[in-house]
Image (tube, rainbow, N blue to C red; front, top):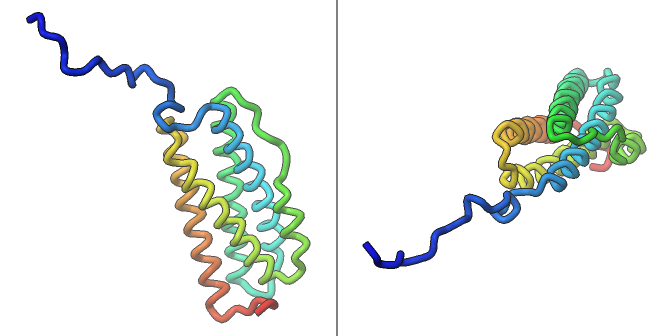
Length: 165
């Protein structure tokens, strides 16, 4: 057969991840470190919130959020090391901002906005991750944050007063 093919061969399989719409390695490292710093800040805020004993549901939520945040810090650090990057040792500015909110229920609402920020960040990042292991872990982190946001919303809306309302 001497006929020419109808179209030239496609070499897309040889193209880099960025060409295919996936995040470049340096973007991934930057995003993971940003998330790590945010998770560390959230863990510290939740640790302080867990000491508020006036409302058992509040304290329980804070303990659960702190445990989740610590788990995600470990996961993010593990993936950063696997990618050959150094995990950030900083705590995000969110911690100082949240701790400046004096009333516990207002601080919970502020923490919940931070959790929602992580949800939005993960919703944007996760589809751009080609690495199956990292993608699965980030998806689990996303679902966990969605659940925590819903729990906090229910607690805040369930007859609990925020001083600003």
